[in-house]
Amino acid sequence: MTAGVRRGHVYRTGSPASGVYYSIEYRRTEHRSPSLPAIETTVIRAAAELEYFRRASFMLSVQQLRDLPPDEGREIAFVGRSNVGKSSVINALCDQQGLARTSRTPGRTQHFVLFEVGPERRLMDLPGFGYAVVDKATRAHWNETIPVYLEERVSLSGLVLIVDSRHDLKPEELNLIGWTLAANVPLVVLLNKADKLGRQASMAAVRAAGKAIAALGGDASSARLFSAANKTGVPELRALLDEWFSAPLAEE
Ligand SMILES: Nc1nc2c(ncn2[C@@H]2O[C@H](COP(=O)(O)OP(=O)(O)O)[C@@H](O)[C@H]2O)c(=O)[nH]1
Ligand SMILES: [Mg+2]
Image 1 (cartoon, rainbow, N blue to C red):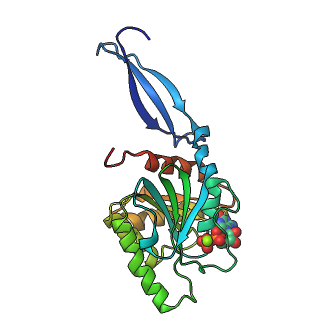
Image 2 (cartoon, rainbow, N blue to C red):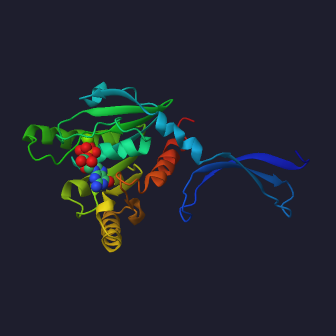
Image 3 (cartoon, rainbow, N blue to C red):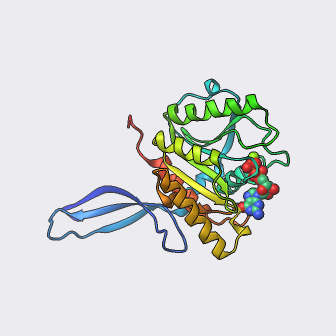
């Protein structure tokens, strides 16, 4: 290393404009002299290293919040009406066909299902909602449990809300967005099954969802087109989740 050069700044970046989005970490090397801010970057962590999602494995499944593992490390939760493709999104993210079961009998699971993607890094598949034949008690239980989880789970580092790109956001989905914003939890809204929409309709869907999110005080850019079927949005989702997983913990 040249004398007068300081190493050690680690940054994380990405390039949403380029075809390939990736999250990289690099070291910035600067001369001490402010008049000579020579910058040398070394990529130390590239797209390929987001491979850890591929190593996700089932951890456990519980019915009650009190049975969740210790509230430590980082957890990213997935939620959506039954049949919007929540399991398919998790499978696409992790590139594993059978990780989260895609079901022919939607909405049956009222379980919290956890997957481990690394040390103290978990994905949480929240119980589905909006399932027509679900009884009142189950619905009431969901309505009580989810806001508590969003509000109180310290390790919760982000929420992925999956919706159907072909429909406007439904009241329960707007509620969820409101709860998430109120709990100060980072949010992304995936407009799934975008493969079923043409270009015009896709753009309209993103605009409408963004507007609805902004009306609740959120960021319109949280709405993103996605397709678990043809993998649209998968690299961007991996990069975003990687960011959420990498943000420093309060005690760090
Ligand atoms: N065309 C299309 N179908 C999808 C997509 N994602 C999921 N599906 C289908 O939607 C149905 C419900 O998916 P699933 O992942 O089980 O939904 P979940 O109930 O929300 O977990 C299945 O038949 C999936 O194959 C997608 O992006 N495009
Ligand atoms: Mg499912």
